[in-house]
Length: 297
Image 1 (cartoon, rainbow, N blue to C red):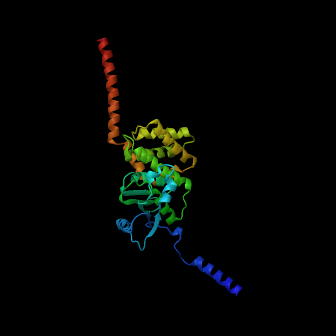
Image 2 (cartoon, rainbow, N blue to C red):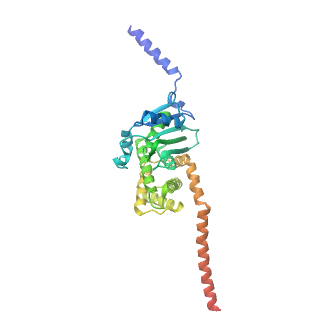
Image 3 (cartoon, rainbow, N blue to C red):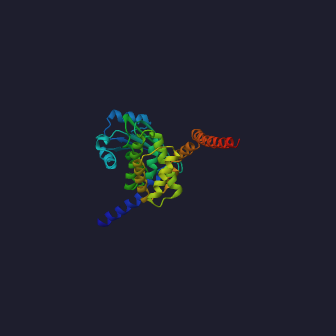
């Protein structure tokens, strides 16, 4: 009987090795994973699935609860800001290799789609389209947890906890910066993108190099930062530097954002501003020349 049992066990193991099953390596472009907030009502869940165009009977659905949100946000937001309910939900669709990251949102008031792309790229998420939504307006700060969880579930690629933490810190820092006078969501995201571009190009070796990248980026996107804002960004990106993040890989995932920053630098508004500066300089020297000429006359 022992020999028979052993033979059956070996046979089952052999069959298991050769039976085709869906493994993580089979994750392919077009695969979809949905995350739903644990505190949604049944009707709200169904409404969100309808909004996403997803069939509950066939889709891969995972739940994100409030304790997971606190795990990644407690260091950066107050418990009152995070709240006690998980509401925001997301859908992540894998794309072709090299397609980069794209995002869209609905009923998300605090975090913009560009902020999600930036943070997901930092975390190491690649080639995917993400959609974040809620049944009513919410901040959206917790949605990053669900998106990363969905990506790990579908691809089988474990993202290091350090990267998850710093990606969440990036979202919160960018969103807080967006609330500053004269900044806003778009410029805040553009600033972070510009910083990453500068880090990729200059390969910082020290905190001073990181600070220079931050200051240069602020000029590039025409944002005025306080000393406190600069130091907060330097703290964040110096932390990333110590994690040896591959900025080239990060940049390849946010090509759309990089293109937008380049367009901003070459925009008519920027060129117009520079033209006014040069015109003013020209007028200044012209007035001096005429003044000197009048002395000799």
